[in-house]
Image (cartoon, rainbow, N blue to C red; front, side, top):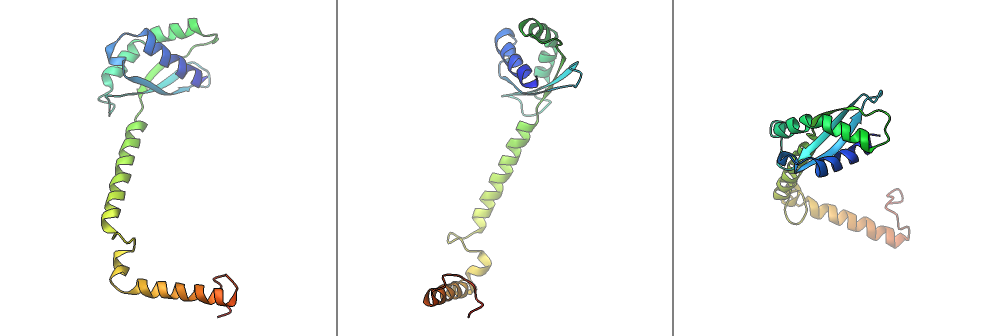
Length: 155
């Protein structure tokens, strides 16, 4: 039922409402109470990054809630149409913030790593060449004995 309401409300807002504040609104989720008396409708807006930015849009949607409810009642075969309460969806903004933090962390990580892919602590100490020579030796020993495994019990 919530998915049906989401689709219908999206179409109604797009086609039936002429308020310019609602031109870039997307319905992201609808949560309906168990008794179908109330529905919380979550939305995003292209020009809104916070609840404060979305306040005029929330006001416009809340003002149109009665009209939208009547349109839902007449266009669907729902026995009961819930009252609509609109709320700005902050998850999209949080997702953008998380993506920016991840990008920043990746960029910082790339600056700290040398281009060879080794860690800076091991690069100058000669430990990498020792590790490579040990790995090379065990691989040669395995192939010489024909075992093909890296098990060191036989060595």
